[in-house]
Image (cartoon, rainbow, N blue to C red; front, side):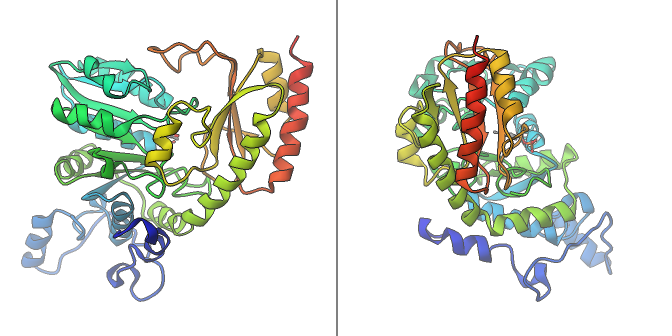
Length: 394
Ligand SMILES: *Cc1c(COP(=O)(O)O)cnc(C)c1O
């Protein structure tokens, strides 16, 4: 990608070399475990590159995977992209590739829940210590860095409560202290936020969300800069991480329309959030583009857009009210994912178990993913379900 303005062109043209497409529009789905070589010379050549954009062994990918890897690498602006069977595998593998017993990592306190669990339940058992830091700490992260701190892990905006981090300030501190940085960029998707341009070493996404975009494939991606790509690539391979050619094909197909989908998700979500903002039961909106969202100033400075995901905080609530609201919704389905074409909802009464370093003194948090339905239908749906919420308050 050469400039910020040609993203649509990039999404259409990337990963479409003739070697991948064989002359049709889309890459051929090349399913393989075994690659066969015609001569010793050819085998030796393949062994030399060990599957870096050339066929070597199925686990190293085929031309379908190379096409997707090239596209995501260009989108995120890195040196190379590793593919994983889901976003959680991308996060765990990126961490495992760079930490060893005795190391310490810094994890943002509003991290995606399975990321937290991986640190607490697996890394801890391997002798890797995790400290959770407040998402809004900024340059204050310096006081959390120890002699053995290896990785600073960011997620911005963070899961559920959506705080946006001051990434450049934190990366500057990490660089100065010799700590590598990784960022869960599932929200930023590479079109709206490109962490490597802000000095982050590895950008990770659950491609399951907006890249795939149709709620039908699990996929993770991690893009590294020049310094960390060789290690990320090799360690991910040794961890046995690979994806099917069919899934790689579907992820690439999703990517082609990501920009237009995001535009619609963004527009609709802002409309719904504005309506919610004036609802008497709602305390405030946790949408990065709204100034009620912590870190909104960093969002304005660093991001090129928002999407369909946001939360809102209720003034008061209890479990019956939440359950009545959820059961009362029609277009919003209950589900933990997001980034597909459909609207989704989740709700948390207390945020218990989702953060440890920072408390949660505010009301219940409801998270919405605004899909591609008509906005009027979504607002009508929320309106009647909030009426049920109100009826169950006491
Ligand atoms: C969904 C999600 C993941 C995990 O992705 P899977 O493909 O479901 O494993 C990681 N990070 C964030 C922020 C997510 O929303």
